[in-house]
Length: 485
Image (cartoon, rainbow, N blue to C red):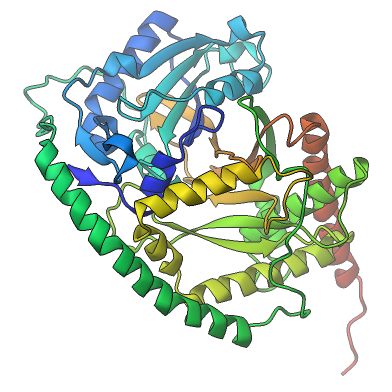
């Protein structure tokens, strides 16, 4: 058994029917030989059965504490049944609308009494113009309490090969699997741990806060933004509202080679800066269309990996920083430079106070304080006219493998990630790269992003405008006459 702490427990405790706390990946494959969906379904099931030992998330479930008196525990499930986690769908039954099917699957909460993952096999993708004949998809959904984006990519790597390998059933006796189910703990042992945590956590929380507050003040006084703007703009935006149980998904494919070329145009610029600039330009275009663009720039929350290189944590090891998207700047090149400077400044601020300091503070937060904070945040969603918040969206950049991968003999041809949305943050971007292509997925609530098709067009136009501006600026520099000696 292992007790959840920090962000893992926060995600588990914040599970709501209209705001489930899972993330997902959607993978599209082109098989070497076209297979009937019955045989394909069985192959997927048997393949996951052989890979159950690849990660602890597959066979452990949550053991919750009565009345929420303490954090839940991970316990190896005595009643684990693989068939309760693998499902089948046909794209034909959904009118060939892949984003709509993904949105429907992503909106469905998982059974919190089982291991918190699901695999949905989507048959018939070869009938779509985007994919070749015989293609199929795997929609893998995992609760955020069990993993973050980085640990998720490690699990995906364990499920794939670098070369195509024909699937073959393995003899269970030949493969070592030392997994054993757990016996649920006694009420006495749980009560004892509740008492220990009730005494330990408040003192540790106060100690962490005492160390952190002076550090934040010192960092704020030393590190200033390049243009002397406020580091965080508290704004009201259409995306900071109470969400519904429905989901919308928009997908935009970007040429990764062009993103790298744009990155090289200015020093100290990363692909993440380019993605943030594209999102900032798209939000500007979208809000101008709705006549709702604020005077001050909107900002984004950016997940930051705080996992050490030798860590084997399967759960969450992420921090958060807030950086401006500079939606107040029209010129794509000027916006890119401003976004780069704002992001680097936010990163420096985060490094100064300690990348894992806030995570450590959350880890020691008393359970009652967590529940009160979450309840207050949810209640604020009903505040007339909304409330001002420091960020309007989340933008997560998850680097994927740069080389082709294979699930048995099926080649992985497309991959994308999906985040989660909550009250006050009804818009989530995930940029995931794979084998030369960057897929930008946009998850939203219908009442937060009311014109998703318009926003998708704004993303495409924002990327095209930035790419064209870089090409024109490069050409103008090449045409300048050389200076005389």
